[in-house]
Amino acid sequence: MNFPLYIAKRYVRSKSTQNAVNIINFITFLVIVIGSAALFIVLSAFAGLKTFSLSFTESFDPQLKALPVAGKTFTLSPEQEERLQSVNGLAFYSKEIEEKVSLEHRGKNHIAYIKGVDSNYTKVTGVDSKLYIGDWTLNESQVVSGLGIANILGVTINQYRSPMQIYAFKPGKGSISQQSISSLYNQLPMVIGGVYAVEADLDNKYVFADLRLTQALLEKDSLSISGINFKMDEGVEPSAVRDEIQTILGDGVQLKNRQQLNSTLYKMLNTENVATYLIFTLVLIIALFNVVGAIIMMILDKQQNSKTLYSLGTTIKELRRIYFVQGILVTGFGGLIGVLLGVLIVWSQLAFSWLKITATLAYPVKFEFINIVIVLATILVLGIIASKIASSRINKKLVDL
Image (cartoon, rainbow, N blue to C red; front, side, top):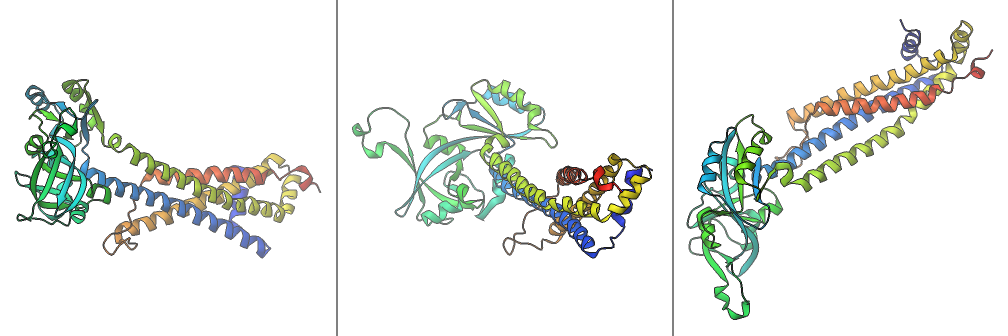
């Protein structure tokens, strides 16, 4: 057996004759356990919050979306549609057109976006699963709006006697002063058939309507669209069909996946995750100064043993290695127990939802194996540094008889 490892294991298991040293060693071990458990729990909590936050965008954003490189719209020809239908791995696609409009109901006004979509839209996104009231009905007289829009305008579903008015500016050129106000926009009375609720910004932003009706409101032809939403077959990644779709649509159209569509949100969540990790790592660095102190106390407590070993032929390098290995064993076992404790707490939250944000919403956490690796690697690296610093205090002067 490796001699320094054998002695280090004996030192870890044995108790000191001085009670103060035992207390310091216990506190050091406890700090490592609590610190590693806390780091794992926080990383799991942020992973859960990230998944929870991105679940909102998944209701609106498809796996892959085609957008114009320049301008607001592009043209999709029947020939291109036929080629899209033959793409292997592509399950559904849905056309849409989007434009800013003014909404009015009984003297209350709100600026929002009308999004005209076809019947495939609910197959490529999950927006219909977010309905708060009513149903997903888009036709010549009904639309679906966000909860925020409905609250701002004071409108509810199925108000046929007092429909919501949608105003869209007509496309064209020329001076506004030369035209009458009524000739500047198209007006469309619509009844809200359903109301969705996702989060505040999206709830205040969109009114969903039938694609053909919206194209007519905006005075666009049936081939003009502002986007195409794609959904892949089960198990097919968007990257597998991206190049083929790009070839069909041409250079005037760009393709973006879900992460690219929400790049700001992804960057914010990743930055928060890294910042939290660094903050807790700093706490661990401060806590692991206890390891340095505990090893130095152990060196002083075992000074007579070190002198004996030195007299028997043990070199200074081997003595340093004994206490270095002891420090790694303490931090390693402490980190492992802390991670197991953190896994148990995260699992209990997933299984029993004992911590809640609201009466019906449990605090989101997510178990990821990579977090175990991150915590153990962090603890071991910091433990190695702390042990190296402490074990370097062993010198010839300390063991001279």
